[in-house]
Figure 1 (cartoon, rainbow, N blue to C red):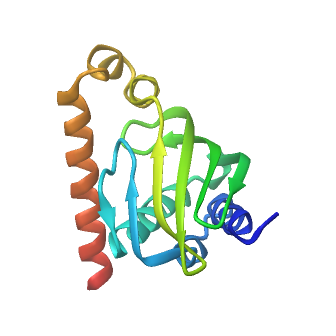
Figure 2: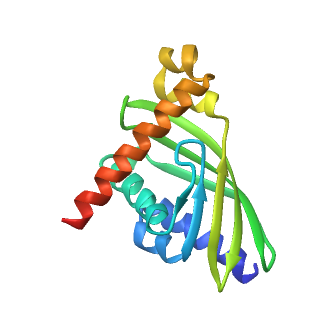
Length: 161
């Protein structure tokens, strides 16, 4: 395993252990992160997003499972697949999300991280009937993104005080 593959492995091992501090340590200060729920995060926002998710998962750690596979990396880019099993905190519904992650590296750290997953599949699990009926729409996706952004902003404000 090369050093960037080890970095990806460390990131997800830390996530499995609900260790946001070590996850954040894998990120470059100029990190850029994006996924369907949290598009276009940068810098401290990206690390705070993971801390917020970890904090929510710690409320029911026995319900949390993460599997990572196909870790591959070169000197500049990398990828893996990870699967998360958890209860979505807003609806208390069980979710099994399958995510493809892509990375860029700079100065021995992850400088860009993009997660892709089937938003409609996720929304059906996370929101039930609402997700089935609306999860495929851009309006619903934007509502989820706005709610996620608001939760992150509140989380960041709470951490400052």
